[in-house]
Length: 144
Image 1 (cartoon, helix red, strand yellow):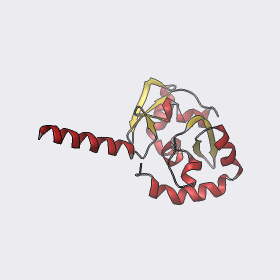
Image 2: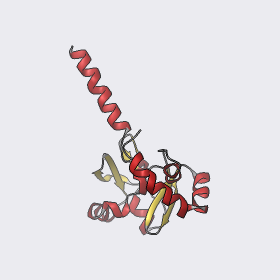
Image 3: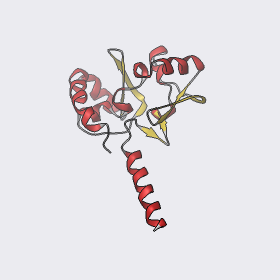
């Protein structure tokens, strides 16, 4: 009986982890990149475990204390749209992982994409894709 209870708990925890609103790999958001750096330095920069913060089921890493403090003060301002899942994939109706090097800031918001090729497609029609993704995200955010 204890064995069955343990299996049930493991399955439940696994199912919950797969339905994360935030794209995490090994419980780290944005593959450990500093999301504030996209805005302040106009480029991706790897964060450090020394400057980390837990928010919405993920550990967020930052390059320095100033970036960490900025994120803590207003995470919604810096966090990528659609939980860091691929913006193009969200527009297409599914969740997909992202490459932190494939990014765009548009209208003050950070969008990540699956890879550089997808980013190119995204940028050519981003206004339409954002409209579609904004409609799809409420339906997708808690799904696998």
